[in-house]
Structure formats: C-alpha cells, structure tokens
Amino acid sequence: MDVTVVTEDRYTFEKSSPKDWYGEQVLLEDQLLIAALEKRQLNVTRKSWSDKNYDWASTRLAIFRSTWDYFDRLSEFTTWLSKIRFQTQLMNPYDLIRWNMDKHYLDDLSKLNVPVVQTSFRARGSTENLASWCESVGGDEWVLKPVVSGAARNTFRINASTINEHDSIYRELIVKEDMMLQPFLSSIPKHGEVSVVVINGSTTHAVLKKAKAGDYRVQDDFGGTVHAHIATPEEIHIAQKAVSACEPQPLYARVDLVRDNLGSIVVSELELIEPELWFRNNPEAAERFADGVFSYLALGRANSSVIT
Image (cartoon, rainbow, N blue to C red):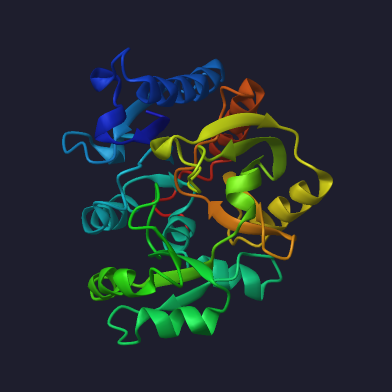
C-alpha cells in the first residue's frame, strides 16, 4: 500500500451513517483526497489509528486526517505513534506532530516573531490559585484550557465574578495536566475566526468560522458555522510566516487567525496533526495535496524507516 489515510473509529467507512451529517462531511473530505491520490496511480486505503488488526508496516506513508479522539486517548495515542514511526512514514512528520500536540508551541512561535494570542502557561502541579494567575495575565475576562486539547475540551470562559467558582475546576485539572490561560478576545463572538489552509508551502483557500449567537466557541460541536472567506494579504502573510517557522516544513497546515483586543491579527492555533481542511470548499486543494504526496513518494523520501 502506498498511502493510508488515518482516521479514528467514529469515522471509518463501515461505521458511517447517512443520518450522521458530520460524519458524512468527514468522509467526503477524505474521499476527495483519496480520489486525488488514486488519480496519481497510488494505492490508498483508510484506517482508524487504533485498528489493532492493521499492519502499519504494510503502507509506505500514513497521512493523518481525522484522528480527533487523540487528546481523549492521549497515552494510548502517543504509545501507538512512537511505535509506528519505526514501521512507516508519517505525514506530517513525527517531530512536527509531537511538537504540535502541546500548545506550548505558541510560545515557540512567538519567539520566532510570529504574532500569537497572548498566552500564559502553568505546569502540572502548580499551587498558584486561579485569581492570582488571572491577575498576572491582566484584563477582566479570560479563557482557561489544557495545553493538550481539541474541540474545546475542558475550556472555560472566566470573568471576575466567576473566578472563585472556576478555581476548584482549575485545581482539579492542574493536578493532571499543564494548563494555559489567555485573555478572552471579544472579536471572536463578533467576527469569528479565519482559518487559512496552507499546502505545499502556498495558501490554497480560507474559511470563516462563526460561533452561534451567545457563544464564543466556533467549533461545529457547539453550533458553530463555516462560511466562505477570501483571505486578505495580511492574513496570508501571517499564516505563511507561521508555517515557515516550522522545522521540518509540513506538507499541510491550517492556521487559525483572530484579532486580539488591540485589533491586531494573531495566530490562535497552528494545526499540523489532523486539521480540517475543507476540501469540499476547494477541491483543487485536495489535488495540490495529492501532488505533494506523489512528489514525496516519487523522490524516494519514504524509503527509510524513520522521518527525522
């Protein structure tokens, strides 16, 4: 097998249902990519990362697409990841995946002069109370979440009147994992979040994600919606600057951009593991992705046992 498109148990072909509208979108995205890869005479299959019956050594390349339960099964996922890196090639590469799993990467990007959302971190086991931490960050409203997370898992919006009630939640979480605190950005419920897709080093398209009325979370899980968007030159510049800061360079990336409370465009997320890429909004992007994969394989880069 040349390529295995990696998903999770919920989104295998066998378990999809016409009534599962979101699952159908996931399948459509992967089908567009698979069709583009097969058009280039590549043998392609699609498997859940946790499929215990699949021999990962039988494929030349594993492309991560919708492993959206990894943060809920982190220990299991990282163990699997560490094992298969010696059995097949990973795309994006192993080092990028491990770096991107932990949102301390925002601090790394900031040190490379990429504008990012102001973010403060606390290590697991910290004894500082939440009120003191919020005061050190400044402002009057904040967002608290784990450094390894997705789909707004354990994400809380906090203001001065709710700090005390969230302190007990924070104390439970900080015992188990590193946490991060950011100023709440008023632009998100008002204007949404722009996602810029960068493939093979170039921007292919963008979308605008909006939260439902009364919420600040733009994810589909919470009623968020996706809209067509033409990225501005500034958005493209910042997105590509963020991707250029990665080492090694990723084949594919999604850069989420918001305006901070001073009105500047900043990176809120750099998604390199399993970003939704909205091929259905721009099928040509799937073709560009497939071109990159074909070139990678044709150049023989996937002949060794490990990507470093």
